[in-house]
Length: 149
Image (cartoon, rainbow, N blue to C red; front, side, top):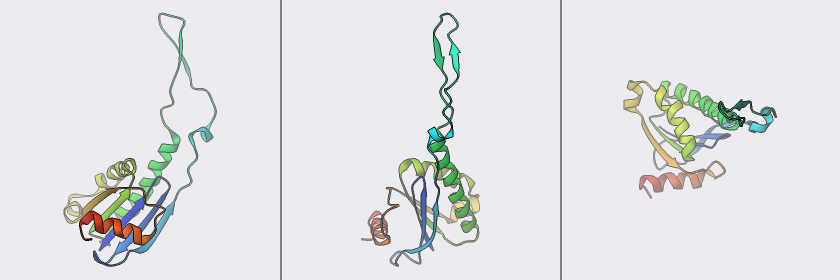
């Protein structure tokens, strides 16, 4: 069984293919409405004095909340995928996402797979944002990527 994950920072779609030439079947959709960083507060950052001069500097915030919410969303989708993997619902998975999102998936999903499942799983990454594309277009991208078309 082949699963295809099409995702950006706030939308994830999970598709399934019975075999490489079958049509994509939509299984699940996830959405996440995360707030922008400025919606988490308008306080000015803390200030620091220079030790030898009267100059002052503002501290930079440690987190960009918007990016953090994307990571939380990817963690939620990864949890769903890990559960499905343990239930043996797929043996090959395509991640079709922008490069930054794929990196978060690698950390969340790839690092959580045990060796037994890692040996039996094929992971393919396609660095594109196709979250607003129709199933046939996504299927064509996969077929071209694999050299099947």
